[in-house]
Image 1 (cartoon, rainbow, N blue to C red):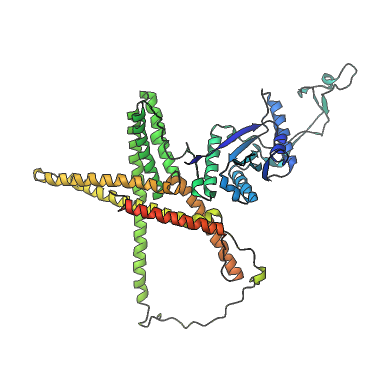
Image 2: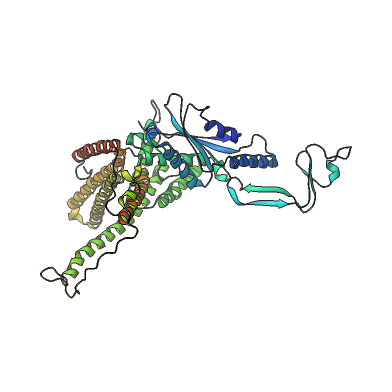
Length: 522
C-alpha cells in the first residue's frame, strides 16, 4: 500500500531554545546531521529579537511567532543516503523555492522506525543594508516604550529619569532595521498544502525503490479528486457515478500532458470551465450532481479539442522532419562520384592537431563524476515516456478514423443507404469502445511503476532529463580536458538494484503484451 506524505508545521515562540533542542546530541537519541543555510547563531538571535520588538509594537494578544518549523517524514530507505547530502538537498531546495534562511537536523526516533527532518525557517529576510533612523532632536520614552514630548514626563519627584524610561540624544540611532517584514505566504492556510506537494515531489524524485514513493493529492493541480466510498454507504452508487465523471476528466488531463499541453493551460481550463461554473451552478440551482456531470463533460470536450490541436501540430512537424531526411540523400547524390568521393572538393591537407594545453596527467585527474539518483533513473523513465507517447499516438489515430466515419455517416443520406448507415454507426461504436479502453490503459501505464499520475511522472521525468544531460555534459568536458573516456564505476548495491528493476520491467512488458494487444484496443 502506498504511504501518504506526512508533513506538519509548528509556530515557534522560543526560537533559540528550539534550535538548541533539535541540534543537541544530548537531547536527541539519534541525531545524524545538522545543517544551516545561515550558520551564524547571531542571525537567529537577531531574528527572534526583531520579531519580539515588532510584536510588542503591534499590541497583538497571544504569543509572538519567532519562526516556523516543518517536520518532514522520510522513507526509511533514505538512511542509505549520505546524511550530509540528504539534509543539504532537502534544505537547499526549500531555500531555492522560497528564498529564506533555514536551520535543520536529520533524526531517527528512539526505536529507529521514523526517519525525519526538523527544518526551522525564517519568515523574514536580512536586508543587504540596515535601515537606521537617527534622532534629529532629543527623544524621550516612558516605561511602556511610548514616545513622549518632554523630559519632564519621564522624571521622578527627585528629577531623575524613572526606571524603564530612556532618553535618546540628538544624532543617536533610535531605530535600526536589519530584516524585511514577514512574508505573508507563510501565514496562509494554503502554504502547508503547497509545502506538502513540494516535498512529496522532491522525495519521490530521490526514492531508491519504487515502493517507497509517497502519495498526495494537489488541490491546486490539474486533476479532480476522487471520493472514497466507505462500507455500507447509502450513497455508494451516487459516489461511484460521480467518480466515473471525475476519472473521465483525469484521463483527459493525462492525455493532455503527454500530448504537450502545458500544465498552466490545463489548470486554467479546469478553473474557468469546472470550478467557477460549478460554484455558479450551486449558487443558482443548489447541489445537483447531474449538473456537475454536464459541466465536467463539457470541459472534457474542450480539453480534447485542445489536445487534438496540439497533436496535429506535432504530427505535422514530425512529417516535415521525415520529408527533410528523405530529400537530403537526393541532394547529396548529385555531388558524389561513382566511387563514393565528393565532386569538386579540394584535396584536404593533414594538419597535426595541437596539443591541448589544459590536458593533465592521469595522476592529476579529478574524481570520476557520479550521476545523481535521478540521472541514473533517466534511461528507464525515457522508456516509460516512449510507451505513453506511442499509446497516445495510437489513440489519436483511432480518433481521426472515427471522425472520418462520422463525417461519412453525416453525408450518407437517402432511403436506400439505411444498411450503410447502420454499418457505419456500428463501426463508430466499436471504435469508441476501443478508444475508451485505450485511454484507461494510458492512465494505468504509470501506475505500474508506482507513480500516482501522468503529471507526477512527467514532473520527475523532466528533472531527471535535465540532471542526466548535465551529468553527460560534465563527462564530455572532462573527456575533452583530460582525454580518455570517463568511467562511472557502479556500486554492487546499485548494480543489483538496476538488475532487479530490469527483470521486473521485462516481466511487466510480457504481461502487457499478452493482455493488451493492439495497444489496449479490444
